[in-house]
Amino acid sequence: MIEVIESTALVTVQDLGRTGSFRYGVPQSGAMDALALATGNSMLGNAADAAGIEIPMSRLVLRFGEDCAFAITGAPCQAWLDDEEMLPWSARSAWAGQTLTLVPSDRQVFTYVTIAGGIDVPPVLGSRSTQHRGSFGGLFGRALRAGDRLPLSPTRPIFTCDFAVPPPPFDTDMPLRVVPAAEYDLLTPRSRENLWAKGWKVTGASNRAGYRLSGETLLLTETVELRSHGIVPGVLQLPPSGQPVVQLADAATMGGYPKIGTVIPADLWRLAQHRPRESLRFQMTDYRRALAAMGEHEAFLEKIASIGAARRKPSHARPLVALIDQIADIMRRNRVDEIVLQEPSIRLTLKASTRNLEASVSSPEAGRWHRCAQTGIRRGRHAVVGWLETETGLLPVRSDLAPFGMRPTNIMVGAGDVLFSTRAEIPSSTP
Image 1: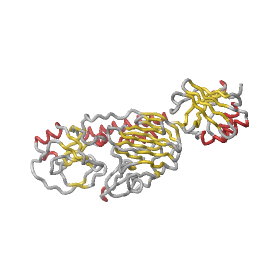
Image 2: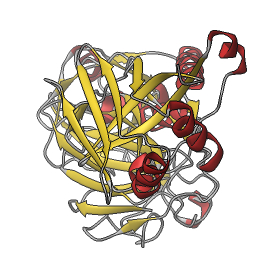
Image 3: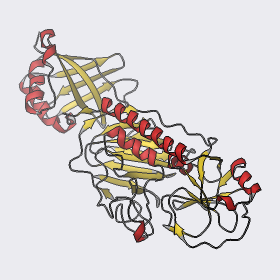
Image 4: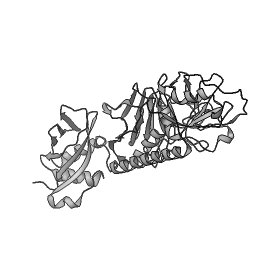
């Protein structure tokens, strides 16, 4: 479970949208930046269409109620896991009780948080996406509110990770590729020229249903009356104002304005990440090149999936902070009064007192995570390590290192409210 601590009226649960429901008049919905959502899912080993959280230019605070892994993709933002700042386009492990805070930057629009296993809200018409106008899908068919609790998959994989991936290239100066549509030839020659040569601005009247553009007025050679026809995300329509509208995720399924083009699927994510008053340009392309561009997307996601697979590590550990009393008891019974984790940048000392295990840290960066390469214990090392392995199931032992008298292990150590990740090389017997 993930608890929403702070949210706005626009934060929703989205996947890649519902298909096959146009005949019922149900829009596709889904993530505005489908590539960002799919990338986050690929980093975590999810299916590409697993549901995540879409955050458009707004602050969001979440508290993890369970151990899980998550990724942040899409629009750059300031993000902190507890007090530790995170990189954009990165994946991390979170322990139950930790808090994730996201604050929007002044670049792009939509940020995504994906969770290993996905957000486990009930699917409606084959999708977990929130549909605003229909008030269904997502969590109760609405935007997230403070106090909401998002269910996680009970079969989600448990692993540790801490890595970032390179984002796909984004530049507002990159033209958006458009395939001319049915009524393109009805534009006057000058309007056809202006469609490609002139710049367009996203207006403030834009939303998830469509982006309204402002620029040179486009004219038709004749007035036409069209029957309503099916439209999909990406269709570029021309209303009587002569200012184009690009249909997006929550667009209606039917419309009667002339269709002058379609933004190719591979470029819809870049269109969606344009803020109001930002400029964009169109570039003519054809169906063959549009298909090739989708192949580039698939290759990008395959590369991300391979990076994620290499960087995710199976988790056998629970935070030792949950076992403080037991650790203190085993230290007392085995006459272990102090454990020291030492490296040049950090010294972490655990002392067994009469009632609990006390921790103190000496480090110029005590609020950050560290990997400690060496461990020293005054006495009783074998007892503590053996107990951790046999009683808690925390630590796998690599037998190939036994001849060297070393046992590598990954442990989580509680130091107040701070968790430190340590890699400890522990002698297998007491000298």
